[in-house]
Length: 141
Image 1 (cartoon, one colour):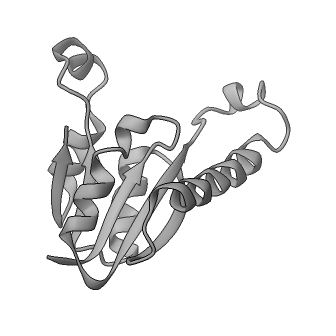
Image 2 (cartoon, helix red, strand yellow):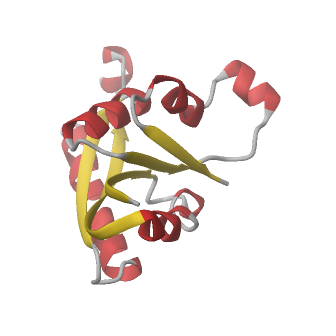
Image 3 (cartoon, rainbow, N blue to C red):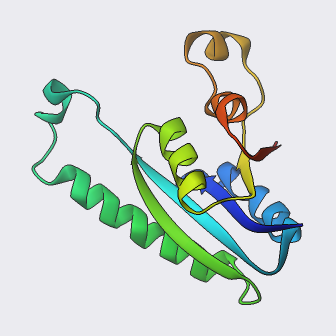
């Protein structure tokens, strides 16, 4: 069992949390903390950012925080301690930084079934986390 579990999710995609939340709950020690992390992707390019409305990133961060709160209220039981976090930036870096910040014992995350062409072209966030994480990672399919 684990005291501190990080669960990065995409609130908009039910597949990223539907199966992983119950698994994370089962693995959590009594008195442990489950940390949900929603990530707002970094635009990464000033040219692209210039086409977005003023204050877009701030609005996106606030919307993510609200969405996480709604998910917790709807899906979580009161018997465990849950903290929500909103990150901003590249997905892999943000997850690894948060795991370090909260001293996570385990990262639980969902992953899509492998698609060789997509993996070759884009790579897998879960794969990057597994390769670079200093703590154990459980991938849920």
